[in-house]
Image (cartoon, rainbow, N blue to C red; front, side):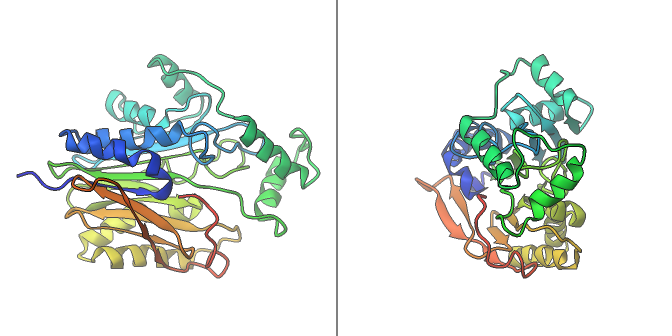
Amino acid sequence: MAVKGIVVASTNGAVGIQAAIEVIRAGGSALDAVVAGIEPVEANPDDNSVGLAGLPNLVGDVELDASIMDGRGLRAGAVGALRHYRDAIALSRVVMEDLPHSLIAGAGAERLAREVGMTEMNLLTPASDDQWRQRLLRRGIRDGAFGPDLRGWARRVTRDPELPPPPHGTVNVIARDRDGNLASGVSTSGWAWKYPGRLGDSPIIGAGNYADNRWGAAACTGRGEKAMRCCTAHSVVTFLRFGMGLTEALTTAMEDMRALDDPYRGQINIVALDRDGHHGAASSAVGKTYIVQDDEMSSHEELVRLHIPVTAETDGRSADKA
């Protein structure tokens, strides 16, 4: 018996959610819908948190992370620290379907992208390059001349009280198809000005992304180190499994992060969908939104996330995209 198809996404997924729901309407799979929804975000030069035009790491290289998960059978694939190739979500699906692995990173991910014929490109646009240079110039660094203490600069650029927190937006897309199958995907250029090679929660199954047909799916944006340490996406799904409603599951997963000793600034956000098609989202910042569209809606709806404070420092912040 067919069920209602639905797509839930972070707000910056608005450029792709219509493509995702059209896949569902045509009888396509939740996996196909997730990829269709994320690819336009990865190609969007106006979004500097995902794919093309993503903000670079500390030394000026754009490194992409992504993952995809199939709620039917719990298959997953992910790529991390991918340079020179925009289509991180499609490459994650290649990992899931063509390799005996779940995560490929760095040079190996780039090799795989070449092997499957993806187009190599310069992901650093002039606008993103200028943001990187201006951020460093405020600390007296010109042309990436950090000296030998790069790890010290990673701490200082991140924690500088005179500057806003580094941007770290991400796109999340969760879909349920008309067969009732769930899938979830995440793609990001990661925390801006990060130490080279840093992986956040986005490519880590269970941290930033998780889907299980039996219970639901969840995905995260924001300071990924928090989600990694609390296994946040998996926690939401586990709380659903234990009988919590979606609001209680989201709230409990957010409140878990209050136990973290974390001196670095950064909000955390979750979107989720349960097996019955109920959707919800939460954020440590005030006023954050998410979007949803089912297969009977002509356009998506933007809704306000639950506000669950995690620390006094993130409470009230709402500057990042997601």
